[in-house]
Amino acid sequence: MDKVNAFLAKVVAEVINPIILLLAASAFVVFLWGVFEFIAHAGDESKRAEGKSAILWGLVGLVIIFGAYGIINLALGTAGIPTPAKLQSR
Image 1 (cartoon, helix red, strand yellow):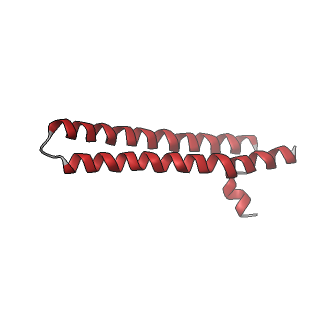
Image 2 (cartoon, one colour):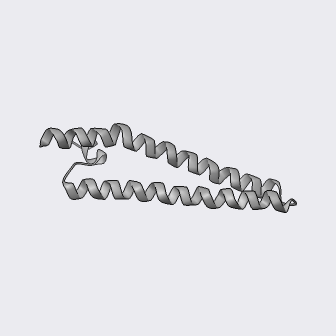
Image 3 (cartoon, one colour):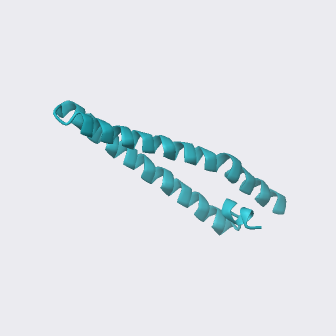
């Protein structure tokens, strides 16, 4: 069982966490693009609406991504599988 736990911990550390980081970065870029659109096109109401929409979806994406990260770590901790932070401290 230790080999399975070590394998799952490695999968999370080497595959899942980089994917979550990439998705979080892209959601943050969408958020920043929305802020840019909102500020740069302050006179054009349709562009401001596009900016507001991008800001909203960027924030929604960040909340979902960090919620998934928390749920994954909660499930790992409940199952007794060491999280990547615990693996590094060994």
